[in-house]
Image (cartoon, rainbow, N blue to C red; front, side, top):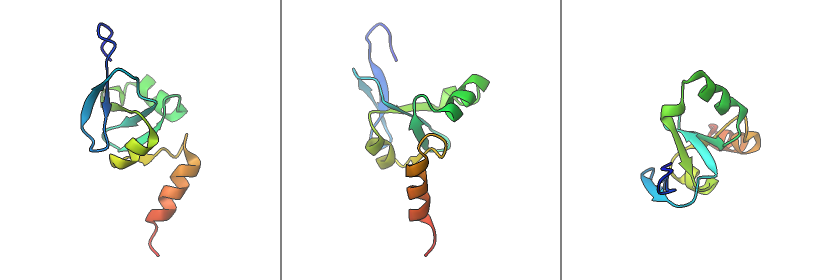
Length: 91
């Protein structure tokens, strides 16, 4: 986020960054393609270890995160993760 202009960079449904005057409500990890709540305990631990801050991305909403190819976090979005996992299971 740019403090001087109060502009944030979010990812769109196509996975490409765009500038927004509104902060993202969901965070994600570019490498693992996982999205979750900004207060996700698992993500906050990883950030504190310094292992994922440079790969952090933000989304306006869950729909955009999913459309960009990210999956729900198993820690902070358990119900949505279980639905995602069940939908991908072989039949």
